[in-house]
Each structure stands twice: as C-alpha cells, then as structure tokens.
Image 1 (cartoon, one colour):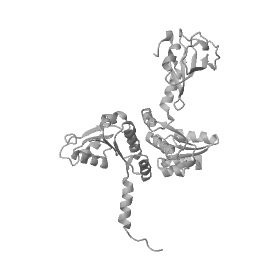
Image 2 (image 1 turned 180 degrees about the horizontal axis):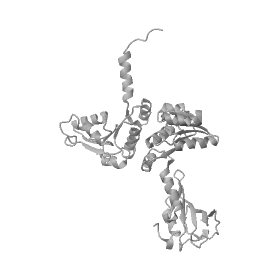
Image 3 (image 1 turned 135 degrees about the vertical axis):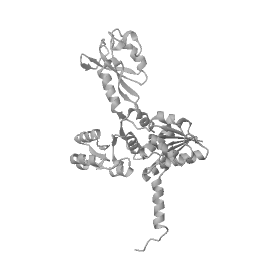
Image 4 (image 1 turned 90 degrees about the horizontal axis):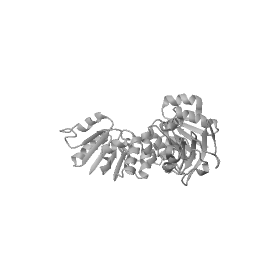
Length: 146
Length: 224
C-alpha cells in the first residue's frame, strides 16, 4: 500500500517508519525541513536510502499534497500538531482526492467524537489517556459509601 | 437577530460594533487573552474569551439559537471548521467566513462554506472597477442563486454603441440593469441609447459572459 503521512512529529514519524519496515511505500509531508531528523533517528541508513519519501511543504497547499503523492495514496494519515489543520486536510483527502482510508489525529475529544459521527476515522489520544489514567487511578475500586 | 462573531481583530471588533449599533444581539469570541481584555473594556459582556473551534465555547455563546455565525479569525482552518460545525452540527441557517489566503478558497468551497469572503479578492474587484481597462468586471456572484452582475465599458466602435437597449443583441438570460455615464448611474429604458464610453451593468446567468462581451468591445472582439 501507498501511505501518505502529513506531520512528522512523534506519532507521524513513528507510524511512517513502522509502515516502511512492514514493506509499504511511505511518503511524509511536513512544513519543517528539520522534521526529517525524526525520520532518520534510529534508522541504520537515511530515510530516503531506506526507501522513504520526504516532501517539505504546507499541508493546506494542494500542490504540496500532490507532490507528496496524495493522488496515489491508499492511506492518508493527518498527524500534524494542530487539530484544525488535521481536520481540514483529512476532509480534503477524503472528499477531493477520494483516498480510501483516512486517519486523523484529533486531541480534542468532543470534536473527535463529532467528526467520527460525520464519517472521519478520528483517533483521540486524549480520550485514550483519560481512560487509561482513570483505570490506573481508580481501577475497579468501589465508590465509598456516603 | 442573534449574531456570533469569532475573532476580535480589526474586522471582528468593528463588525461587532456595527451590528450592535444596528440593534442586533452580538457575542464576539476571542481566543487571545490580551486582545480579549482590550476589547472587553468597550464591549463588556458582548465579548467572551475562548477558542471557538472548541464546541463548548460555541455552546456557551449560545450557538443553538444563533441566526448568523461569522468567522473572521486570521486562521483559515479555524474559520472553516467553526462554520462547518455551526452549519452541520448546530444547524445555523446562515454563516459567513473570512478567507485570509485566497488559495484556500477552494477548501472553503469543498467543505460547503458559503459565503467565503476574501479581502484580497474584494480589493482586486475594486481595482478592476476603478481601472476599466480590465474589460469585464464581475461585481457580484450569487452562486446559490446562479446569478451574477458584471460591469463592462462600451468601447468605441462596439456593436452596442449607438444602439437602443432594445436592439443590443444579448443572449437569453441577460439584462442591462444600469448605465454609468459622466459619473452618474441610471436605470435604462428600452429606448435608452447606449454610447461609447458608457459603463453598463448587466445581470446574467453564469457562463454567458463570453457571448455578451463581444457586443461591447471594439468590432465585436472577444475578451482581450
């Protein structure tokens, strides 16, 4: 599969590397040229030598998305550090470029839930953290009697 | 009318002030603390502090009963998403979005955000209006209603010059609605004679420009 990752932060770059290792074709788009270091980190060779693609560009610019290969993408991952950017580009990928699978990282639980109802595949790390912390802190403790 | 304005920059603040002056109920939302405190000195309870891309902030402002939501922040993604949830989640009848970067206009359209207003485009239109050498100027486009108003200067030797409005050969679905002559505008009658140097305003179905322009250019030439 051809996977396009927009936003090479901790999440995006880690997913990109794992997808490349798994044998997929992977292209990464980020507006910061230095984010390339996140991709090289822990690799024996450079990201490109390992077979990855990297494009510097703004996610909202259609030219940058096309250069990064959105027209061929089977999977689109929106993982920039901004919820609003992610929600907009995910909808561009879905509606304009008909990418079959679109995954979007949204930190705000309320909007992650609403956009999921609208047909976007949202991932909300905050919601997972809330549940994990709640589970760790409270476990299956019985509430104290008043 | 109850209006929510998002973004208390120069545009949003003045807009809120104007709307309040016209007797509307207004809530202005600003996400930057310092800006909020400045604006609050004037608008008091009509301005709220918060990030309007968050649903609870919109709900606190009473979006469920808003007649109009105007998103004029300096961030296009924010304006798009605020209008999208206003329209699709809270079923607000009317929205207006500001486009900061005209290149993003296509994304507003893709998400169904209309009208989307771009200052750059508006200024370009005004320049074209002031500098008639541009030829055809689009003054207003009502995309939903599929109508537009254009302005054309009548060139010397154009087929329409010297003709009665009645006799100008225009396609079905177009109409001359105004003539600007010698600095004044008037609504022409069917026997008004069009003169070279006039600027004429036409209302038309979109897509007819190409068949209208030749009537007003020299020797019936196409758009130059």
